[in-house]
Amino acid sequence: MKKLLTALSVCLLSACTNQAATMPLDSGTYLLQNAMNGAEISISFTPAEHTFAGKAAVNRYFGSYKENGNKLKLNPAGSTMMMGPRPLMQAEHDFLQTLDKIVRYDRDGDTLTLTTADGKTLVFKRGEEKGD
Image (cartoon, rainbow, N blue to C red; front, side):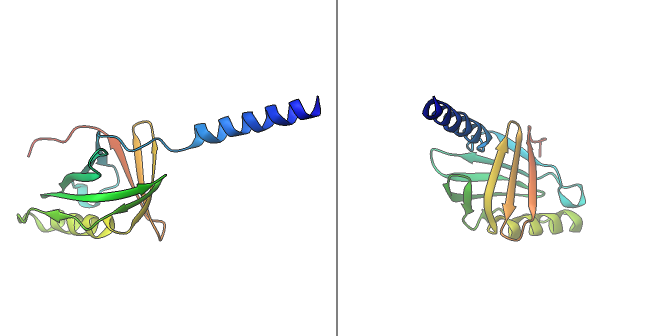
């Protein structure tokens, strides 16, 4: 009986642990919720190709990534080179500089959180970009 209870406990704990694991990256579009200067910043992933892309306030950006579990490494992003208002350009610069510092992601339903090694978080919600 003790062995059965122990085995059952282990199974239940495993199930709980697996449910708490982050959801995998998907191909949806996510909008940054804590963007500087009211900028519209988005990100989307193409898991089959290990690429990401989005809008960074003024310009479009794109790159590739590697993931292992919820560990995430975004390679340096390329981008278009348009100019815009100074506050939006600053928001874009700060965002793009943060991307290659990302070390993990957590996805829970419509929320995607990207975290840097020093604990800074970028919180995204699934949504649609506004027109350019």
